Structures are given as structure tokens and as C-alpha cells.
Image (cartoon, rainbow, N blue to C red; front, side):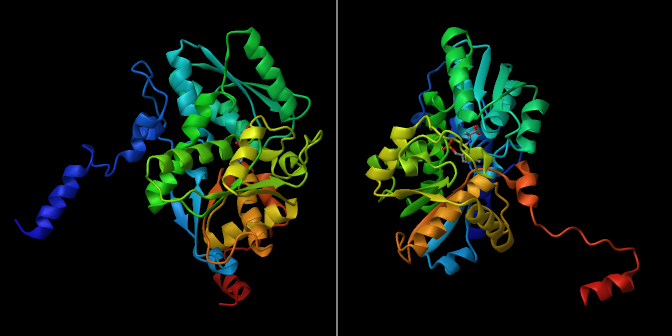
Length: 373
Ligand code: F0G
């Protein structure tokens, strides 16, 4: 056997039986990181093929910002289009293990989409409570099409969360917001993946911050890997909040949070203290960015990198860019930007000021003239 044949034999041998190639993704978060999650023999190994999202290397923004390297952890490629699927699969598995029949969450849209999908697939009832008129069209549609009971509450996310917490205290329904510890456990796997994909932790992790579960989860994930010697350093956590919804930057709750980034329109984050701890322990920062900076970052990602992320996700690039300009992130830094959700979820936010399609007839000469070909 030649060396080449031997190599290809090995490659085929490593493939899954259906010829799918690497089956890491199909194992999902629970299958791949079982030993690092709070599972028992009775926890069902469920998955919708979440996780294993790409860490996409920047082609252009990296040099504009003068960074040493820049990767985008594109969580918008999860099964329901956001990072929420990582935590939801663990929360739903534990709910099933505990004999629960129904799950509930308050949501700015992505948690509800994810809860609805996992409930549909694994035979639970899903109830989602959203701020009336304040969630992106695609996210509302997801909860509806997956068959969740959708309740719209007058008032913002913070009110909705208060209501569902009280409901769960009094009725047999499992809360699957990130105050459910299994959500954070599942979400920390994104930090593991970044290290697994890049070979080490970055020097800076830029991340949007809303209810503050995700920054808490990433920090835990990096710390666990570091404690086990799987990465040589811990990143500085650089969090981005929207200017009109920046309680962690202001140091006090915001009564009426406002921002185009509806996913992070949150005035009183549930994981407040953990987020501050992640910031301080990592010697990082949490800063605010304007809606203008968020939309500019969203367009920049799409037009310069070919990545369409939702406005809340773009807050991570906006805050990274702001921190570089302010000299808080030095040139040459190795950075990862977490892009939490898919841009297709929120067409209304992205559409603003975009050029309309140019009407043409099928006359090729006219088209060529128009295009100056
Ligand atoms: N990015 C997106 C796309 C989100 O949907 C959220 C939160 C965040 C960032 C912030 O993450 O809350 O862990 O700090 N969305 C929640 C929801 C609140 O209901 O879907 P966080």
C-alpha cells in the first residue's frame, strides 16, 4: 500500500458510516462535551445539531483595526440561528430528565425561538412571553411556526422575565431563561470550541451583553479550559451594550431601555454580578455603543466579510472597534468577536436606508448600459 492509499484509508475509516465526514456536528453540544456538562445516566442525549459553528477568519476588518488576528465566532449558524441553542439543548434535556412537561421563557426573541424548536422536537409544551411589538419579525415567526404558545406582554423584557419567574415559582412549568443554570452550562461550550478551533484562547473576546448570561458562560468556559491546561491564557472580556440599554455601563438599571438592537433591549440584566465579575477578573471592560455604531458595524461585517449578523451581534464588533480607537485594545491583539445571531431574523432593522432593487426589463442592451459594462 502506498503512503497516499494508507492516508486515504485512515481518512475513510474516520468517517461516519453514512459518509457524512466528520460527525462532530451531528453529536451536538451534549455529545461533544458530555464530560464537561452536568449530565447523569438519565439525561437524554438529545440534539438538533447545535454548536460546532465556524470561527471565520477576518479578511479585511482585521487590518483596518490593526489587530494581530480577528475571528468571528458565527453563532448565527446554529439550528435556530442563534447561540441560544447551546444552552437550550442542555436545559431541555434536564427538564425531560426531571419529568417536566412544559417549558417557559421571557424573551427578546432568540431564546423563545430556540425554546420553541427544542420543545417541538422533544415533545414538550412551550410557552414564550415576549415584549409586545418589540421583537424582530423572524424570531416571532419562529416561535409561532414551531408551535409555541406566544404571549405578548405590555412592557419590556425585564417585566416579562419577572412574570415568568413568578409563574414558575407557583406552577409546574420549567423556566428556561438563562437564570436556569443548565443554560449557562450549555453556552460555555462556545468558549471550548474557540480554543479547540484556534488552538488557544484569544487575547480579547468581544461580546454583546444583554441579560448577561452569555458573557458569564464564556468566562466560565475559558476558566475551566484554562484550569485544565487546555489553553495558555485567559482572554480579556470586552462587552458591548447599546447606549440606550446600558445598565452595566451606567451602574444602575435602565427603566425604559431603547435600542435598534432589540435582542439586547434589557434594562436590568439577570446575571448582573456575574458579568461584572467576568469583566473585572479578566481585566476587561464593558462599554456602550450607539445605534449608529451598531448598524455601521452590521453593514461593515456584511459588506467587508460576507457575514450577515443581527444588530445585537454587531454590538461586539462596534465595541471592539471603539476600544481599539480609544487605545484600550492595543494594535496586534489577537481577538475573537462573538456574532450571536443571524441577520435574517431581523430584516426590518437591516433594511433601513438600503438601496431599492433597480427595475429593469429583459433588454440586455439596456441592462449592460445601466451597468456600464
Ligand atoms: N445577542 C443576541 C442575538 C441575543 O439574542 C441576546 C440575548 C444577546 C446577544 C445577549 O445575550 O442576554 O446572554 O447577554 N437574547 C435574549 C433572548 C435576551 O431573549 O433571546 P445575553
